[in-house]
Image 1 (cartoon, rainbow, N blue to C red):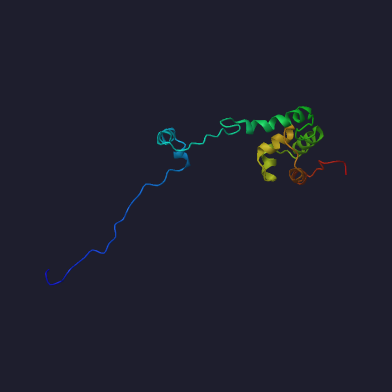
Image 2 (tube, rainbow, N blue to C red):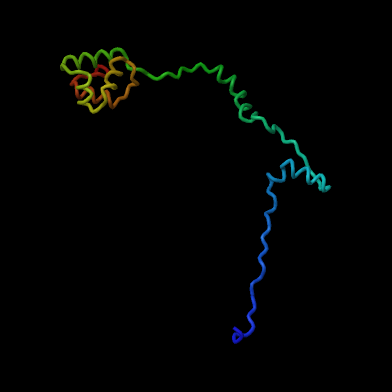
Length: 142
């Protein structure tokens, strides 16, 4: 190798340092104590409503009185008795079961059961399907 001449390294040294402490690490009890020992300035600030969940519950107290005074009825409309009886009568006249009627109008048998028991929320599309399938006027006396 003596024929190649002088070989030198042209790399520069790489220095790896630890990151500066982030905000959470600065608040750590050990870090605060170390800073006190070193004589550094330490600021302590008490935040308003810190460590409480008052922000979530304080807004509800404003609406409580209004909610107490609210007497609005929020129940859904149900199928009227006349409609229940008209559907049952028309289905019986055609000699159909609830399942057969449901299949004819492309609905589940449970829908027919709910309409005939009065538990369903009236849907005009379903009522018009029932009228067509049963050949009877179910809504009003037109």
